[in-house]
Amino acid sequence: MKPNTDPNQEMKQNAAFEAVKHVKNGDIVGLGSGSTAAYAIKAIGERVKKENLHIMGIPTSYQAFQLAVTYSIPITTLDEHPQINITIDGTDQVTPELKLIKGMGAALAREKIVAAASQLNVIIADEQKKVRLLGEKGQAVPVEVLPFATALAKQKIAMLGGTALVREGKGKLGPTITDNGNFILDCLFGEINEPETLEIKVKMIPGVVETGFFIGLTDIVYIGVKDGIEKIERLRK
Ligand code: 5RP
Image (cartoon, rainbow, N blue to C red; front, side):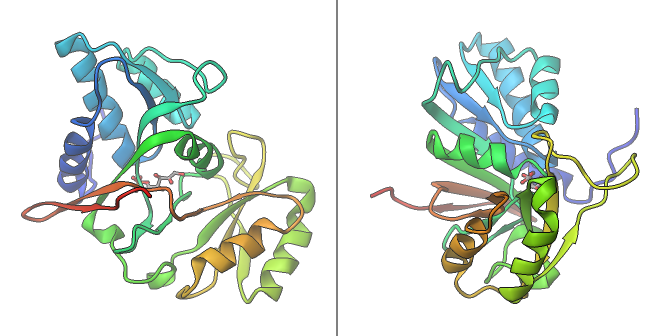
């Protein structure tokens, strides 16, 4: 097996363990994507086994689906369970106001659908994901687009002050293809003061399927830091 060389592994793992404590018997659980969410899926699988927990998972990607199978988590669909009790997912950036950029794993569209269907959204991260403003440190906003709309979307994003690059695939030639058969545009806007407004403008571009802005969706964030875990919480109105 390849050794895990991720320097933030422990922080991600600690945040995941804390989040998984929220899962209760009988829950429908949204399973996030990415390396941090993978720790949560593994920990959920361990609870299913040890505590004989009866839950069902809804994966947000083929990655999450395969991990759920590996860790023997029973799977269901959003069609069967359009109301999800809890979703645990990772993030690429998080502000103190619980605004996020997600999608560096190209799973943003399904992740946002699952988050919108969830009563409780718990986000897990290591301390490198903490920012004051979204877009800091050269972070791009991933945007999923229909392949047919790529050129138009790039033009429209430039008109909004951004630079959009088609994400290249790894292990294949040409663009990354999402689990929905679309392309990802990584859009650089610099530091973003009003992500709510920008999200609406990007979402209005014909052919845009979803943006990586996750605003007003998150209830709790657990951030693994060097000497423990930080918790940020918001109260739903
Ligand atoms: C995938 C995501 C991931 O949750 C996000 O990219 C964080 O990944 P990681 O935990 O590997 O840093 O949004 O679309």
